[in-house]
Every structure is written in C-alpha cells, then in structure tokens.
Image (tube, rainbow over all chains, first blue to last red):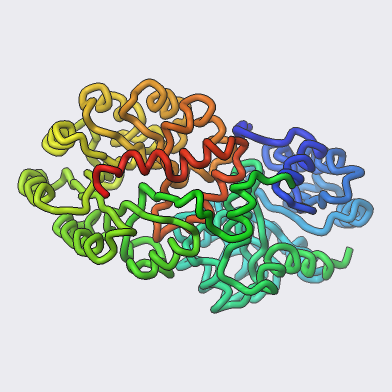
Length: 240
Length: 265
C-alpha cells in the first residue's frame, strides 16, 4: 500500500538488486502477501519467484478455521510442491489473534515439522504488540522456531535478551541490529546461532546490515553462521 | 558485485585512509531507554578506530536530561582533543538558566554550538525560550544541531524553515533530516544555504540518500550516528551502497563536516 522509495517490482529486478549488494540467495515474501489477502499474495509470490532458484518463498498464514488457504493437507501439499519452507505472520494487517485458540493447529504443525515462522516485531494483534506479542507467541508454542525481524534501532536488547535466554528456538535478524557493538556483544554471550542476516529490503538500505556484519568484531566462523549457515540449517531441518 | 573503490576499501578494512569520517551527531554515556555496550569515551574511541571515524561531535546524554552536565563535555574534549568536539544542550524547560549557560558556554573551549532536542523537551523550535541561544548563535555564526522529525509539533521541517530565514548566521544541522518528511526536508536544505541534512537514522531508509543527493546535493549533507547508539558501519554502509558517486560519499562522510568544524579545530 505504501510505496517504498526504492523497490524491486519483479523477481528478476530483485535478483539485480541482490547482485548489486553481493547477496547470493534470499528468503522472500511479496508485499501483496502482507497488503492483500494471503489467498492472493501467496500465489503472486509463487509466480514471481518461479524459475529463480536463488529466491526462496515464504507463505503468509491465516487461522485455519476460515479455510481460506484450503485444508491443512492442501496447504502443506502446496508448500511441498513449491519447496516453501518458511511461514510468515501478518496479524495486524490480516486481523487475527496469535493465540492457541486461533493457531494451535498451525503451531503444532510448525513445531512437529520444524517449520520456522517469521514475524516483524512491529506487528500487533488484539491490543498487544512488539516483544509482548513475541512472548505471547512463544509462551503458547515454546518449541516454535520463531524468527523476529526488523527489531529496530532504538535499543531492543533489554526486551529480547530475556526471551533469548528462555526460548532456545527464538532467532532475530540483523536487518536493524544497529546497536554499536551489539552483534559482537550478543555473540559473546549467546553465540552466533540465534542471529540471521537480513536486509529488510526494500524498506531498509541493505548496505547498513552488510557492512555492519562484514566488519563486526566476531570470528570468521560466527560471521559465516550469521550470513548464511544458520538459516540454511533451519531450512534444512524442515520436513515438508 | 561491482563496488566502488571506496566501498571496496571499507568492506575489506573497515575504514579508509582517504575518507576519515566525521560524525556530526553523537552522544556519550548511558541513557534511559537503551543498553549500550560501548558508552564511555574510551569505548567510543575504540569504535571510532574500528570504523575509521576521525572525530565525533557529541552532546552527552546526561546533559540532555540536566543541562548542568554540559560542562563535563569540556573535560572529554580536553582529554581527547583529536577525537571529540561538543554541542552545548539547551533545555527550554529551564529558561531561567539559559542566559547563564550561554555565558558559561562562551568561556569554554571545545564546543561548536548548541544542541536542541525539542521533540523530547516538548517545546517548539520556534518558541521564545530558544531565542537567546538562537540570537547568540546567529551573532557568532555557530552550529546548531536540532533533532528534527516529520510531522512533529515541536521540530518538524517546516519549523526549521522559519528559523533558517530568520537566523541566517546560524548553520542549522537537521538531525535525522526531519525523518519521514523527506520531500520538505530536502527542499529546505536545497533552498537555504545555512541548512544541512544530517543523516542519523535517516540513512537506513532505502533510497533516501540518493533522493537527497539528487535534489539537495551531497554538499548539503553531513554524516551522524548517535554514537554510542548506532554502529558507525551501519550508517557508513548505507552511504557506501547508495547509488551515488565516491565524490558524493566523500562530501557526506567527511568533507562537508571538515568545512563546518574547521573554526573549532
């Protein structure tokens, strides 16, 4: 709905952007998956990434009770057919609660099959938002592999470190982890396994997260884990 | 990936001999709403060395809360004269202190001008309580770094424009470039020779640097990071990977700031 200043209209344009920044592969969603119904957006995403093996798709979810995304079997079958290994939640835009009443079936499926769920910390639902929403999700599904994106530049460590210590499958992306010394401080305390490189393109300038990670005061092995190894490990574990 | 020579140098070494970065928007010390791994001057210098930042111009966090803390920045500059300069924070909620503080300021070395934090102090840039500081800065051709934010009732770009017309002797640095109201901020920087776009946090918005360079020109932009908030490499990376020339990047990262702070070196 809102137009970013700079963006990629098609899968091919996105690859050109990735080439500019030296990014080999990306886990992606389409803006229409957020701004439109996932019924429409998930299909648009599949069409846009079709034939591009450097782009890996993510499906937006809805509470299964309305049946809009088909039966669970249909949904899983489509994920398997298109090798979609990750899910994404937009509860504010799509107006549902992230509670067990609404999502227990999906939470249990994701845990059973090791499917990661991605969510921006800027999401909200039912009057709760931010890290309180993240804690709500994790308290309902403590074994869920949850990746929280865009955690923002205004100092979130006091929010997320207690959750990192409590929930071992919680991960955060680095797209807005701008805190001076944040990445090295985090790795020193928790290791590098919980951080995933991200850019937040097209909203955010990828150059920031690229140079920050390239020059962070961490080991080469930690840098490789954050750059690609951790996400590859998470996606490899998924059973479709 | 076809990187510019400057970008390649930063990617390989984390710094550049030919591009000694000057950070025109920094702070110092702990703060209420955030955990800092590196808040002390010595920590900041370690970060600056890692990132190729030659100098920062800081207002201490403590002075944002209580302006009686401003004098401590003079000590920091005295101890690290090659790495720090300072802004003196004006808090309009204590107007009875302002004249005396300006007198104190005038006696001290190491300061380049004033810092206004109107959005946090909840007082508009154009209000009369800022006038003593504005008049003094106008008379002495000082820098004023202002927190500016789009649509704010206290420090939106439109308010900056009113000051820019009235106080032509002041160099106004629009902290955060009036975040969100990009078009208006760019217009003001383009139309007023004494207004610069300062990039802290703004740099993260994809495409905004190219827009500023195209419409206002890289000669009207300065770099900042809010250090010890943001890793300088984050902002530097945003500048380096924007679709602009290396000449533009030099202007933004150090040349313009060198000209502005030259009288204070």
